[in-house]
Image (cartoon, rainbow, N blue to C red):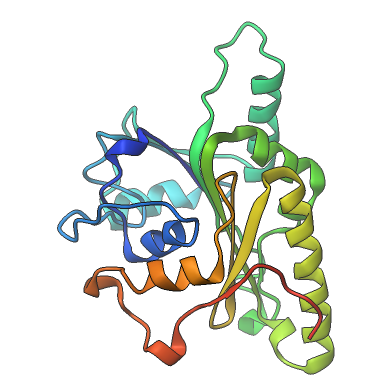
Amino acid sequence: MFVMDWELQRINMFSAQHVQALVRSAERLRFDPSRLFSVFYEGEIASYDVTTIDSEPALHYISEKWFGFSETEQNRIFIENPAFYVVARAELIENPKTVAVPKKIDFIVVDVCYGLGAAENQHVQCPVKEFEEEKVVRALATNLAPYGTIVMHFFSLTSKKDIPERHQLANHEHQILQLFKKYFGNCYFVDVGPHLLLTCTRRAQITRANYITTFRKLPKELQIYAENQEPKFFLDLEAL
């Protein structure tokens, strides 16, 4: 999971995947393809304050060894249970003690999975179950700035195999969407192949027409889908 703090008027870059995620939240970007970030947002970071939280200690080593990451005051990695971090940070915001009150966050991405490395990866699931608990969803909302955006990756390998499980999956996603709407207001899913991106914001509700129009205005560098393969936009998901 990573969180980002920025001055909104200075947004002018992002990797292709994260530009698309922000477009889905109706964020207005000025995109410069010459200024792309690595997966660890190493490089031109001066205008951005980035915190990455991961429970796997090897992440820090991998980021330095293979991605050129170097920790700075504006870009750091914390090895911690992401759900615990989110809840603890929310408690400091709501009940400030002697420590400085944490700033609210402009952009939160939750991409936390379990099951990777299991036999044949047959039980990969994203996100981990803690991020579907109401206390964690509420804590995410507490951490998010008034005009911020949260994007959460949903993926289930086993649930794509047969119709009964797909019915269960759709019902489950409908419940998740209602839970997040309770705390964020405006939420929707985007279907990208076997993956779903849940996006929530307190901005005005995006419509399907807004989404399609904005998506097709992306620079050519980001037009990675044929028209009949574009991600599908859902304001709600119901049982199939």
